[in-house]
Amino acid sequence: MTTGEKVRGGKDDNGAAAMSESSLSHTLSRTSHPRTLDRIRSQNGYGVDDDSDPAPGDGGEAHEETASPGGSKDPYEVGWDGGDNDPLCPRSFSKGRKWLITFIVSHVSLCVTCASSIYTSTYTKMEPEFHNSRIVCVLGLSTFVLGIALGPMFLSPLSEFYGRRPIYLVSWTTYVIFLIPQAVAKNIATILVFRFFDGFTGSAFLAVSGGTVGDLFARHELQAPMALFSVSPFVGPSLGPLLGGFINYNADWRWTYYVLLIWSGLVWGAVVFFVPETYHPILLRNKAKKLRQGTGDDRWLAPMEKVHKSVVQAVGRSLRRPFELLIFEPMCLNLCLFSALLLGILYLFFGAFPLVFGTNYGFNVWQVGTSFLGIFVGMILGVLTDPVWHRVRTRLVQKLETETGIPGASEPEFRLPPAIMGAFLVPAGIFMFGWSTYPWVHWIVPIIGSCIFAIGYVLVPFVFLISSKSVAQHYCPLEGCEGGVRLWPHGLLYG
Image (tube, rainbow, N blue to C red; front, side, top):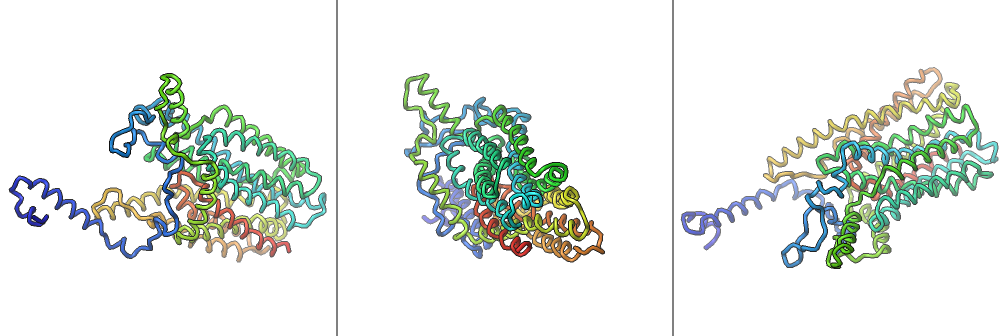
């Protein structure tokens, strides 16, 4: 008897089953929504495999015991007792403690990106001392960001094996140490080399901190803390010239690094005393180890202990995956190219502002630094629009749910509206800045233009950063592209 016959004969003993099959067929027919037929099939990636063996942390955050291949639960698999309410689970921390940890790791990310741009305020005093050209000084900016680009691909997979806290402590300690040679450097080569190592080690927080935020908050709580973390790397570059302008106007350029040393040292203390291990798979592994020691039963295992994968494999996968995403995912490639271009333009402002406001308007060093307030305010305004875009996406999701009947149905394009708005604001701000950089035009006009650019600048990469749990692990190709984009405009300015 066919399904249709069972439905028509619904009074027989199998009527309930017939109705179930009919409902299933109806559901399947509704899921074949026309929207999915004309899409580019790039979500799973033709060339980006999912790797048959999961990463050590995959599935480690599950709060219930997973089923074994036979269909029954493994009674010796260690999980959280009571889900997020387990005292050992980071999500059971008090709200104040979770926000304190989030603030610290976000603050460190801001410190790293601030160090990338504060360096630009040392050019004027450093050039005559080392007898080098401006373009050589600019290399220090590029080597730092090159380190930021490469670091996540190595440091992020290491955190899957050793936890987040060891990576934080080792990387930030070396970051602080590498600031010392820059502060006492006798030549420009020393600064260029150690700027790279500082960017490499400092990138650990850009690579891993997003995961820490995800460890602390459940999915429905994640929007606000992830917004705080995501905006920190954006605000940092605009804050650097502002601080650097005041430092270099009132003291020697080496005090730029002394201030960074003091700041980084205080942050190091905060990380040591207030940021615990939060990576769920590592905590479950520690819990399983204690159970084995207490019971003498070696059958107690954490999920990550059932996965046999070497550090070399994890690092190789981390090195390969970003480029696979760029090659096989058109949407990812377009967003990365667009964001890389915007980052290059942002760092171009660091070279243009001293020329525009110093030469045309006669600003001194600290006044040039305050001119970056336009970019700073623009970035804050851009972040404050996030609730608006969240409501827009919610309406789109609700509409798709109504059309398909699938709860929670969504499309990746639903996150594009802020990027579309940013695509209009960015050129508008750039044109306003470029057309108003004349002595007879009031200096506030180009600053307003830079503010408009900054709003659009935040909206574009915010599309995929605000919802990402491991932000910089896939953000590093963008940083690498941006490092190359930055070199040619500085050559035009100073060549």
